[in-house]
Length: 301
Image 1: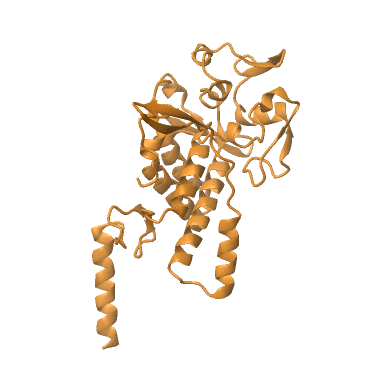
Image 2: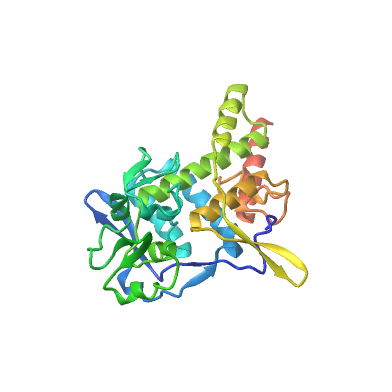
């Protein structure tokens, strides 16, 4: 990838060995499969897989813009989460990283959790742990310090990690499928507008609206450290969630002169182009497109 995410400073992200859909009332959640929850050490370097993460996220958004039925949304979210884990909305959305210390949590504008942007912290906490009782997953604040309370041995294995990790890596942690899908749809819409602008395929009004959509994209940034490898300094990114890492990678991608992500001119899929001149995501699409061109040419003659 051209965005300098591959470095000596790998950043591990955790996912479980399996996930499932589960209803809480009318809300449909993606949750770790209890039988797969023992795979707590299933870690991967998110930045080394960022190419495929972006492609899969954008294609999820593309599919769900055209198909709004619940089965399609679940299937798309399921395959994405199975490969990469949950996005970590809980720790990414608040404006204050220490949100559990306060009685109310303020969320970023245009978040996918709550349009009001302000919630009681306990209600916010419960949104992400709808299937856990207080003995399994709760928190206390003592002398300005947050502690996760649990009777789960699996949860206790995370005790020496950060509070963020204890939350989003918990086997009780869940995310609504609608949050995942709406995020993917928004990212695809921005990417599609970017591609249309680059191809000069819009009239003046549509071009104006496309620029508005792209300009509205806002990312608050990822903390980082400087690591030394010999005499060479290198940025070591410290994202608090998969979503935060994706947001940054997406921004770098949009602004890169060597952007390798493209939309297939035949099937419309987003793909990673190893050849900068590639127009199709596969030889099958290229051959089918050539057949259609030939047929159209013959009809014209």
